[in-house]
View 1: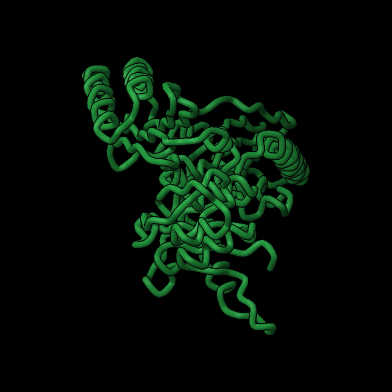
View 2 (view 1 turned 30 degrees about the horizontal axis):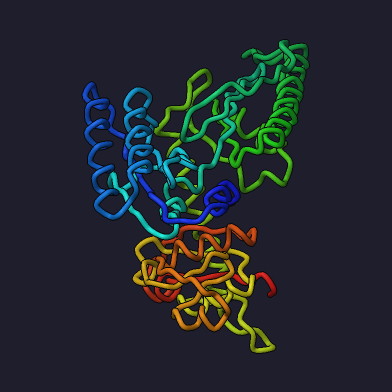
Length: 368
């Protein structure tokens, strides 16, 4: 996950109000429920020590969601009476919650706003295709490809002239499949879509897939709908979730292979809060791996004003010359660090405890 959108949060000192609002259940009473939630969250933040202007800013924004709720939910990060960042979520949070802390509580975004693979869906028939962009937050038209219109249909007789006509039909199909594949490849490149989904009859889908460039090989999925049918939201969600799951598995496999020492005795990955904190301080992290329910993700570490200044113990931070130090969650401190160094982060779920990063925190190293 590219975390560049979080930069505004680290341009200002804390403390921060971090709020996650679930808006996935829409009913006639949603505006009233969100109004009640707004007041409850405001009181909760005040009870944790938040200032009144910040509580009011959060309350106002949550109430506004009652008039135009997001499909899944919204995160809000506020300080000094201002909501600095309020990204929409692509998955519903476990619950509506608020936290007041020295650093913004951004770690849940790795799951809730992280992987939002956009699909370019191609509705294919023998005449051409229509393209549509589909993501967690909606859809829009993305163009079309028109092939040759005649001849398109076979006949059932078998004299010489008919066989000649059949060849022309085959040539038309092949021409149209190539036209669709070319236009689809351009559409994917221009929109930077993560996935290409082919919808239509099996023969037409396969003809187009065979002609797509090799770079799209692992990005292509097919839906077994007939010509003219539209892809349902649940179909798109299934395909998107499968892509996210597969990518997380690949990154975890890469991490497991990298943590074994090489011929020089150096591992290309580290795990556990102390080792990952040290790698973050030295700008060695290429990709941060966080297991959401890992036992050490909420472990207390110490942070300074500069993202480079983080340590497991407070006196460690003092020895680095930092006069001011605050306790923070390990996952939030590490997310801040990788944002500022341009690294990436991903949420992973290990199939067994043996495969999980120690304590739920690991990193692939940049220098290796």
